[in-house]
Each structure stands twice: as C-alpha cells, then as structure tokens.
Image 1 (cartoon, helix red, strand yellow):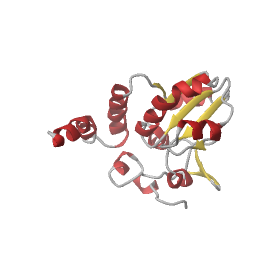
Image 2 (cartoon, rainbow, N blue to C red):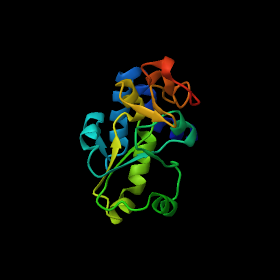
Image 3 (cartoon, rainbow, N blue to C red):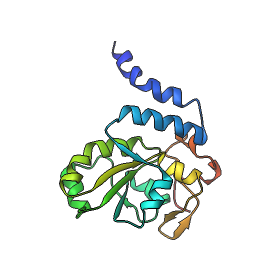
Image 4 (cartoon, one colour):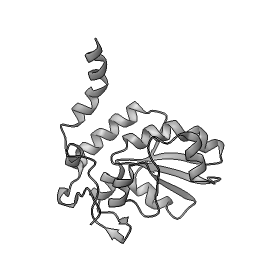
Length: 176
C-alpha cells in the first residue's frame, strides 16, 4: 500500500517524461496546471508584454541554478523559504504583478500556491507562474543573464531534467 501511495502521484510526471524538449515541457505544463488549479500562468510572450509595467520577477530555484543564468531583473528566492522570511526579504509588493519561475514550473507553482494569499494581502495585484519556466525561456532563445551579463547557458537541474533543454550543449552546472 505504501509503494502505491508514492507511485500514483508520480504517474503524470512519468508519462510526461516520454516526450523531450519543448514538447515535453508542454506536457509537463499541462500536468502542472492540473496539479495546481488555483495558480495563474503566463507565457513567455505575456511576460515580455508586461515587463515594462510594475512587475516583480522571482526565480524560485537554488542559488547555484540562479548563478548559472536567470531572467533579467529576477530576484532569487529559495524555494523552501518561510512565509515570514520571504515577506521580509522581498519587501514592498504594493501594486506589483508577481511572476515566479523555476526550471519547468513545478517548484514555482508550489511556491505561488503557497504565497499568493500573503502577496495579495501585501498589495500585489497578481501572482503568476511562468509557463515552462527558464527551460522554455531558454529553448525559445530569449535573453538570460548571469553575474557578467548576457549568457546563453542554463542550469539543467540534473541529468533527468536536462532532456527538456533543447540546446543540451548549453546546459551548465556552474557559471561560465
């Protein structure tokens, strides 16, 4: 019985793992939408449209992943941060659209689900997850940055998730 309880939630993930690259990310996103129905999502095109507006972009990956590359202007937030520590770290969110992302969208959806009420209570106008995360952004050859400026590399999270990075030769575990 214990084994079944562990395996059943993994079935959608295992099925979506059959497809790779951008197609696989689309399948994963569909699973994420089903798993986190209260979380809003924005596409990369949507994000570029609202970038000039009052936006707060949060990278919900580990510091090592963020160091390799991130979306321009993003702030790194540890995925497991407590609500109180997060609100202290992030500061004023009044009238801001908050967009969170991670590698593919699962960690950031979990984060968005967990923090939406707190962000909205502090004045955020919306909280959304970036569809397909930084992998989708990278796969579409959109601008990423690191400490030195623009880069075309991305942290693959691990060898399993690396298959969703279309340009696998651009996957790095440490900054260039």
